Image (cartoon, rainbow, N blue to C red; front, side, top):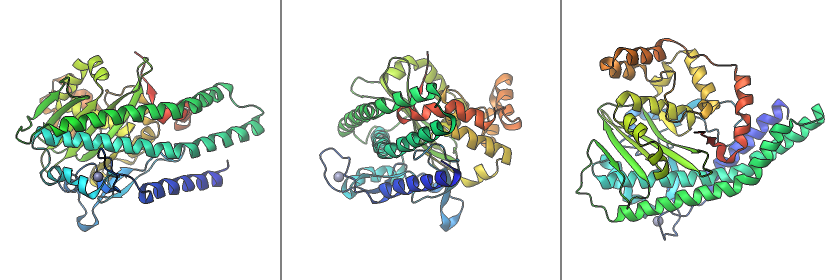
Length: 393
Ligand SMILES: [Zn+2]
C-alpha cells in the first residue's frame, strides 16, 4: 500500500468503527433484558469526569485516539468531549438507572463499588465485541500488504508470515473464548451485587477475596485527585495458555480518587504480595496508573496536564503508546513522569533512593530506540488475538 492508500484505508476503518459504535443497535446487557441499549458512561460524568473539566462549557478532556481500528496509524492525543468520554451502549434506559446512585454521589457503599465493577466489566465485554467486528478489516489489510510485499521483494519474511498465519487462525476462537469467560464473570458479579446492601460503607482500603466473588477486587480511596480517568484493561497469558486480565479503574473526584483493580483470581494468587505492595503505596499506585496509560487507550486526562508536558515528553509518550509501552512489565512503573506536580507532592516523605528515582522521571528523558526499530519489534504482536502480550515467568 502506498501512503495515500494507507490513509484511505485508515479512514475507511475509522468510519466503520464510528458507525458501528454510534449506529449499531445494541441490546441491553442486563441479564434477561431485550431492550435497546442507550449510550452511557462507564465512568460517571458528573461525579468524576466533570471534575477534570477546565474549559467551562466546552467540556473537553484529552484522550488517545483509539488504535483499536488499525494499529499502523500514527497515534494522537486529542480532544474528547466529556459527553463522549468512556461511553458505550451497554444498558437500556431502565437498567442504566441501576448506576444512578453511583453517578450522583460516587462510591459510598460496598455495593456502589460492585456497581462500578459490574459496569466496567460490561464495558470491556462490549469493547471486545467491537474489536471482533473490526478485526476482519485489519486482516484483509495484512493479506493485501503481504501480497504486495511478495511482489516487491520476491518473498515475504517467512518468520512474520508464520506468526500472522498463526494469529489469524487462532484469533477468532481465542477472542470468543475470552469474551465468554469475561461475560460469565460479569454475570456472576451481577448475582453477587443483587444480594449486597447499601448499608455497608466502604473502607478507604478494602479487598474482596471471598469464594462468593468470581473476581478479585481491591479498592482504595486516595486522599488526592489523580487528574486522569482510566478504565483500562490489559490482557495477557503467562505461559499456562489461559488468558488473564487486569482492569485498572481510576475515578477522580474534586479532592479524592477512587482507585480499583479487578483481576482474575489466578493472577491475584500469583501476584498477591506484589499487588498488596502496590495498593499500600500511593506512589506505586501513581506509577501503575501511568503504566496503564501507555498500555491502554481507555483514559481521559485533564488537558493542562498533557499540554504542560514538554514537546519531547509528548513525543515519547505518543511513541510509547504506539508500542503499548512494549508490553512486558504490566505491573511495573512507567519510566517517565506524566503527573509531575502530584508526584512532587507525594514523594516528599519517601526514602532518598526512591525519591531520586521518582525525580529522575521528571527531570531526565528516558532513552528510546528509533521508532522504526521499535515498530518492527512490536509488529507481530498486532496479529495476535487482541494484541495481547505473553508474560514469561
Ligand atoms: Zn435493560
